Figure 1: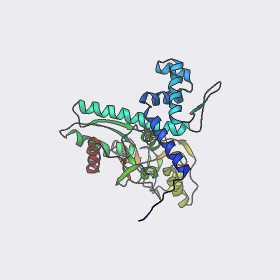
Figure 2: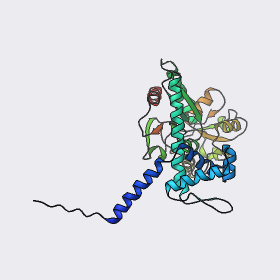
Figure 3: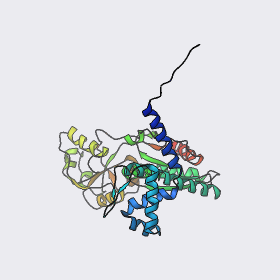
Length: 322
């Protein structure tokens, strides 16, 4: 006969009891608790949050206390004014996701009830708004099952912030290191080298053989520092034995940038798709200069969770359009 003895570490047992207690408390939280928490953080005080929610200040205080009791940690430090505790950012991150997931569920159910396959929220960068995304959407419009699609155009930073808050289902644009995170599924579609662009009356267009040295003498509209594109531009000038130009303005607004370049001697850098789009419209011209290095490919990124039928349809349309 073989006797097996198990020794249970008391600290491990206590840890398991604590996990069970926390799980039980979390089940008592409702969506309203999380909405109250987000409102207090957003407005900065219980009174302001209560006014925004149309509730009484004692009621908001009670809801917040229930959240803290369920989590077992203080989220705000009380005093003459409430101040965030070290635990607040963790709770906010999960609260935003759960509230956003709940709203997404409501939108998808409403879309299906309206006779569509579902709803998809797309974040698009300029590089895809000029060609890839319109082609995909036009192809989807011809299919028998309609989709409810919402498109937001923004910079990479803005889109990824929305994606983290669960406000977008899909990002279509330039892929960077954020597209390869542990909770993100990404797929490259094509390469799109950047182009150096100017207004159609720029002196360099009349010069014989524009060079980087000649271009450096003109004002530049550049992306902000510490971005991948700015590093690629600066590296190109260094490779040419030149100091990177001081920006006349730092901007990521395509509308502002192309308006300034049309009316001035400014030089800028746009994605190849956007540059050729503006050139076809006779709004900008492309200079025969190429960056020595470039940033990532154009593609799409979405949550690693199983895509909905509507999202799967959009992903396939983008593949075909690419």
